Image (cartoon, rainbow, N blue to C red; front, side):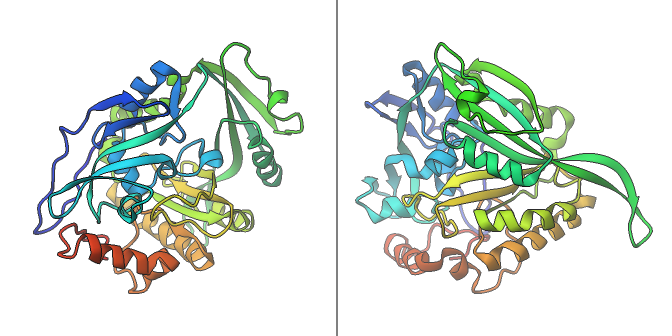
Length: 382
């Protein structure tokens, strides 16, 4: 997936030809910015190596994900994609090409920097050894508290976790206004995946104390197949026409405590045409994440609504839900992931609140590396 963000009155730089994958350098690999994570996996898996964190959509560009942050099913172990970058090649606003690493403040600025400090042209991604196969246990829960407890237990042995709330539609009920609207009973899903070469693990190997309502399915597959597991979702969106609809996605990082206390309030307010599932992604808070802003605390969650598509008549209800979630989360330390819709007419202090103690660093680095303000965005005015 590659897209262009229009800059009114400006010029867009096309990076389409920067799509090469370099050779391994031990436990890392150089890759050009417009190559995809799928391209990287094709090369790295030849030596049974994988990036520490892979985004859910492997067909996103490497440079695009690094400019935003990057979250995946192994983020509960390794944090964000940006936490595992060895070096960057960047083109600065004066036309020079530099290679920078963690010793450079430009390196930090470019990671989750929204493309506002320099243009990433290549990245050196750290790799880890991986097994050849993956077994996944598909668990479902009726009890929210047991689900949250088992997420913590599963972290100890799992290689990948996917967790979400899933609505079981129960028909339509009358509202106070006399309308009938669909309503649901929410279930809680936990998918636990473990790599293996020869002998597949059992659920007891993960943790014998897990107590789901049901173990729905157990599945073995090659690791490449597993890492591409969401491809079918995007293919279905294209086949059904959802790809061409609106996608007002919502992504916000919140503390574990806030998730525990707010989930019961959130779920009844979610329109089922918008929140087909509510993804809840556990993340360990790594310090080397550039300008990717997380709440305070070691254990956090990303709460995400990644609707497959809505038509324009349903958009107002989706936006109302976004504003409701922001009102619930942001005043309690939540941090929006800057890849979704943020809203219109943001208050002047929005960005200062978002970046917190890093706000002055953002402004100073912008003055240092882009004093003429060449790299601009109408959505992100700093």
